[in-house]
Length: 318
Image (cartoon, rainbow, N blue to C red; front, side, top):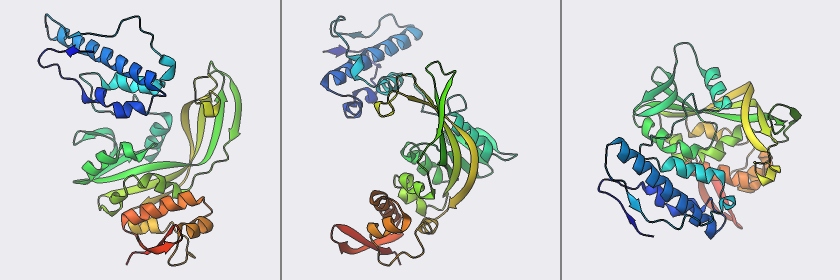
């Protein structure tokens, strides 16, 4: 397929990042469909832009025949949504904002705020959830990888605190397909703990040594609302997750330096130690113990002193 564009009509590089697209596709046919949709969406966006600018001509492209079937069933909805957003020519940086945040994010922000705090402020081109004097507070209910670059950039000149809610208790409410009738409400067997901070800090362990960075973990009671609409994951038998609601904040723990993370280790931990020792003493699976050891090692809090079979042997850094 050949393409010709007028001068100045640049193509967003995100459209052609096929490596990212393949993670959302099940087969080659689905990948072809994603490419097809992205190209069509880009031309529509460029045409709209040129019309607004008063151009007489629009970009000319040669497409596959219009009658070609599109295997839409092979594409996840979030892949289509991300491509549609990424192809807009006037797209702004991704923000949460008060109009696009979840109920849990909004509730945590309101709970954490004090009189005099500024909500949804803009600092150095970034939207900040809460500004308390010279402290920037960012509430993060999801993956830390999405805010890693933002936090590093802000910490270069300002104090930043990331507030991370951990569901210590979770209630699951399932609604009917019309979202009007409550089918059932049950307590989830999964219980979070402060150790869950390592699941996210492993994505940016270097920030533990930054004087301007701190992390506050909130142990909360949350209610997860689901809908039996048949559009959810097959693991949940088609049940979709609609929202999460804050019911209670049980406690919190602040991590300001790597020494605070070391306090999560058991007092009777042998020295030196392996991931098997951590797993046994903390009562967690060994893969989680290896994750903790990896994060502490990247922070510079522990070092490798040997091997015991296939396991690394660690000791506290001097």
